[in-house]
Image (cartoon, rainbow, N blue to C red; front, side, top):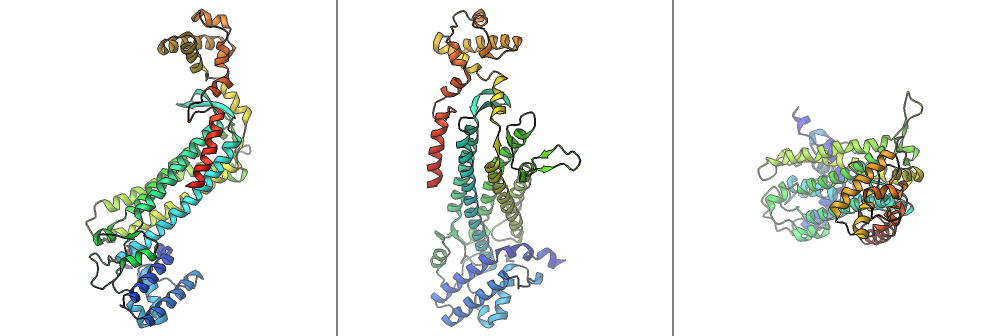
Length: 445
Ligand code: ARG
């Protein structure tokens, strides 16, 4: 039972590349500092290469009794090169070793996620470009509000993902300090060169406090926070897709390979991938929560509880990777049904604000009063079951006698859309500009 509860090899074997990379640089440093000989280091380097190859080729038998990846690698090294293997662990402990390995994994995960998010951004830009002037009713409270375009809507997601990329990069720069050399918790009497180690592992510098170095898991928490926010964004988009493919909306068609049929209702095409993207956000938030709770009561420095840090991170990285890839494909392959989007402008008076704005601009009526007058005219239109622009001018004049026929230019749906030209607004000419600007931003990021 102790072996079962104690071992982490089943999941931390994922770290083998980072473990070997860290050990190689550590051994080079030991040689440079004359703590081991050149000959010993050569043997260690060759041995580690062999171990890596064995694992790469699936010819490595991981042993539970050796607990974790660090001891599995070291024990194999001993088998291969004998005595010098025992010197590799000089001036090091598994505490700083695991902090390093895990940080290298997290840093690499950030780089891959950034790449995937950039690819997603490019798909968003392509679809937004195709739909920059495709009109539909913009909603708040899921109630028709004002005319917008599908391109503008998609570009909102571009902004969310852009922040996600920046957040990941920011987390990367905060964590980019090398813990190796903190040893068990207090540093080491050996004359090591932590600046050499840090530099050769592409860190900005070594960590500054040995106790913090072995007990810090902020980098893992930050990655999972970033991933959680990405999951929020992807889940919201997934939810919209699910609404948009429902028959009453029928705004879009999803790519066939991301939907599935029902086993008993032959007419159905379910948006399974989108539902799973929405659903997976649950475990991703749970993973963050689980490590927060593991960490919150721990005294300094390393505690074995911290071995529970890896599985949630691995799970979040794997699942968000799938979610980003699927979302990219869905955006790439979705087909918009422009007629159905356009139809939404016939209901719910999306040009009511324009009527109020007309009263303010042309008739100099204070906005609050204009709002009230418009409400009365909307009620009238509702009674007559007509859209605002289909109302008779005389009907409008019964509510406000000064309204003139040029009101129809203001409440014309296209004019309404085109009028929202403020920076960041929905007028197609603004959306076009926003897409151009976005293309530059994403190129430079
Ligand atoms: N498997 C351990 C972990 O993942 C490695 C560090 C063990 N350190 C120790 N002093 N037992 O946290």
